[in-house]
Length: 85
Image 1 (tube, rainbow, N blue to C red):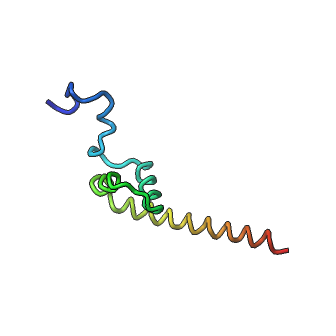
Image 2: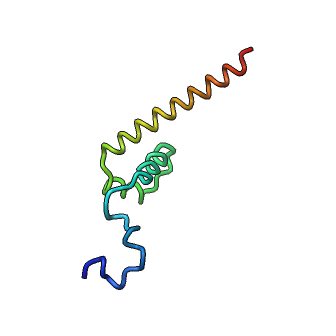
Image 3: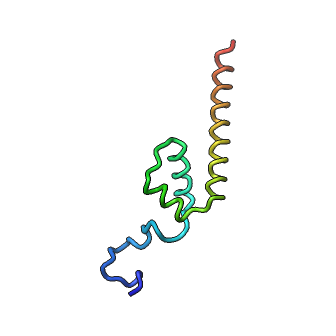
């Protein structure tokens, strides 16, 4: 029997299977943020290595790093401008 017609498979579990298809944009962003914070689970890390493409993660990591640095610079500039009379 194919997985699509398997009567023993719970309803709705086909789309939630961690081993099928490419990662979605939200999964990539979530994985990059979790990895940046050091809270990435082993299950998600394995999923990323099995289903993810390295180029997507490199691009997302560089983008996250750029946004993080820009946010820190903006916060520091805001604080220095508001405290300097």
